[in-house]
Length: 397
Image (tube, rainbow, N blue to C red; front, side, top):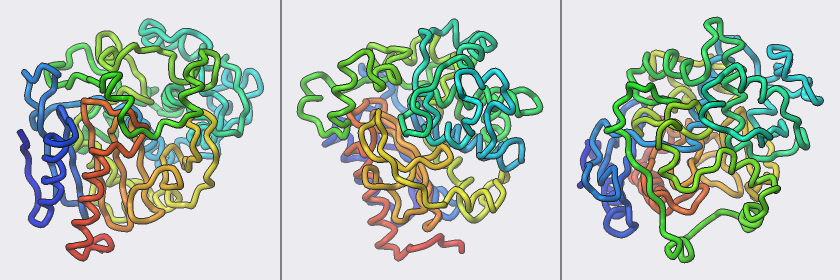
């Protein structure tokens, strides 16, 4: 059931991965870890479907939900590194139509840190609208903001706004999915896409399942009571942020035509090892042929302010589009860690202090925003392994 290579000394992670299948109801999943530029763990196992007819293989891909936001933040960091835009740029300066309804002073940084007041879209989001880029740009530009400056998780919207910004500052006019693929994914020989091509082989893409209603009642969750209560009110911030477009069940997101739409906040599909590899961009040492400017990488480590998120219901530390460790979400061994979680269990991060990058994704979604028990078991096994090996910093430094 379990396959893939691990480096000597990292067996504890394989044990934890196996226990996810035997004790934590894992259906199919993968985990990949790089240390000092070397891939030390690359495991996969289980099945791509609930009927257990399609095995998870080395090339299997899975939707990773908001881990996609981390990949988009890396794409924006690449644009900033190339000096196509800065984090303090006013969006209206490169997108004049955006200035409607008092949005003229909103900066790229505010958008990336979920402080732009643009967490919802008034118009109903359909595949047809998403595929009509010009019309959708008009919809985004005319959206009226709410409470600019206050943190409210832009669950779906942040990716769409970033894509339009990318389109306007890139000399080739590429949207963020294409930019990410051509500037980062292909040069690194990776497999990750935001918005699949019609010709893509869907047989390598995992299905999605979730816990039953009964299981949810007895499951560990960190979805706040505030968020749960908001979701019962169709007019609340959380409902408007999370239910447009509305999916009745997880599998709807990979049912055509949705996978062919660009949803840069949530529908990235790829191999887990590709995600783990990408995070090496934010490490001090240059392990990849694609690089970010050193001063930019240093700025990503700055200590961000922790602010209450009115939608998630937890205090969060958002920084340039990434999540940083805080009171609500813990990962890495230092405050320098940088990453993003996907609802249902997917998680990925880099810890520059250790020179480590990590990614995990399942296809059976848990009732969590982050810190899924399956993922946490792997992360704990990783740090226990590093401690046992005496690794307290990047081994190549």
